[in-house]
Image (cartoon, rainbow, N blue to C red; front, side, top):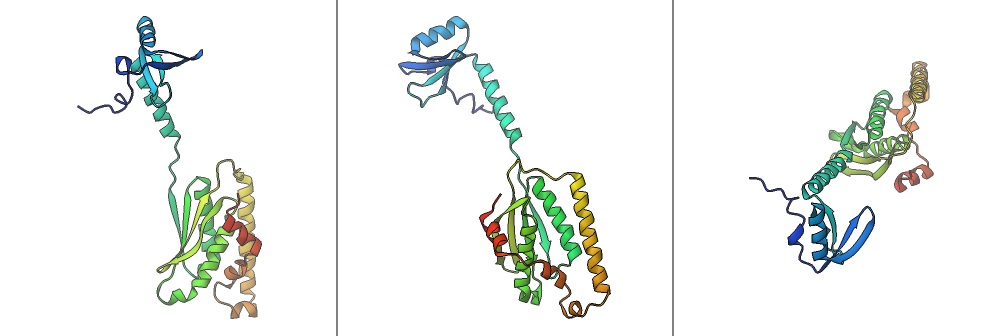
Length: 236
């Protein structure tokens, strides 16, 4: 038969062998001899339950022991239900991620943070692409800066083997979420920006032709010294 650990956690009635106890109830607390407290419990048809043995004198309650155990289990269950399970969601980039893919992953990362989850973003360097590690660092810094409203940086980009990691934690509860209307406006603005970028590329701009394939991403990835300072301090 399985032993109830909580049932053996408290001393009850004659198990309480100290000289005096403090009885707490709705009307405050009173210190009295343990024998007197036992007599009171017997007269009221309840038990003398020691709830704080390390206090001086120990603190006790006059209550039905079965009812007391039920209350403790119920309280523990409620506390467990209130605990939020935080998951770590991964976002993967390549060193030459294009703008459309970047915005897609940025949207998902924002949703993860709004749900209270952490985000681990990383750039995977395959083969000789490790030569572009600085490019990957710039991408991750831009990513953190774009998510500044929803998450704070737990650690700056660091290279581990063929992966460069960035860790973000959700900002504490109370940060107002944007309305659906605001999100729609942002989506429209991003779409207009992407359309303009594609039109500029189609025009055959000479400078763009000489730049790397993801030059637009790198150009937008310039982060000011003040922004970097914010990231490292994790301002909320």
